[in-house]
Image (cartoon, rainbow, N blue to C red; front, side, top):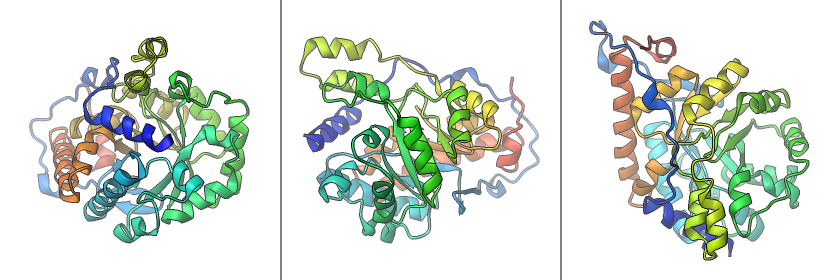
Length: 336
């Protein structure tokens, strides 16, 4: 059933359904154009550090997956492309791999495809109330030779999903335990409804190393679940929340203000490199994109490379036209 559900999710996102009615907020952010940059465009430095490794651009291919049969090809394409580009990769949920042993491309071969880049393991917070703990977290990390573990938060999706896990009592304490006992950094990520500065501060104080805001404005998992729901009553419940969440631009700024020293991933409806530049200006250290890469990932590694190369070129031009020689300068670029 879980594999079927993952395949349905993949089909809905690929069809362009399940998009949030909320905007990311990036259209309200306008850079002041600097007409005399006195820079060499090709020499602009997009390199940065993430999870102790240097990456060639502040980009993360965010978590995505499908049923194991499809996920194997998708994950291989993503790993090969990210290795070629020198950017980070976060895998989709490893719940199926941990519970069934059907790794779906989430085994040692993933690290062989991508020996040098940061890779992030992943499973859902709800599983911490269903038997997952430190041992399963270590298995998820070891399975793919990951540099960090994502625990994803999806309370809205679980609430509107007919098969959803609705008991979220005590999860903060479980997260605090993982942060204390894992050797690798712990990442907390929403899935499209955003993380507030208030919650991010609590998580950082509990030992969480990275916050991925995954704000509203991209894929809405409430909308996705309503699309796949056969029960009209249950579908209507989900549709009411299609525009729920904190817009990505707002979430990034709020989390940065609350957590000045925490690594922040800005994701949620990132359409292009200009959105990425705005996310960095608002406080993101790294920018994640998932749905925008998914179509390319179903085709080939080269298709992913082509897609991300466009994003990188757009980001570089945004730096050029704001007079920013590097990411540090972009973070203080003038806004209108």
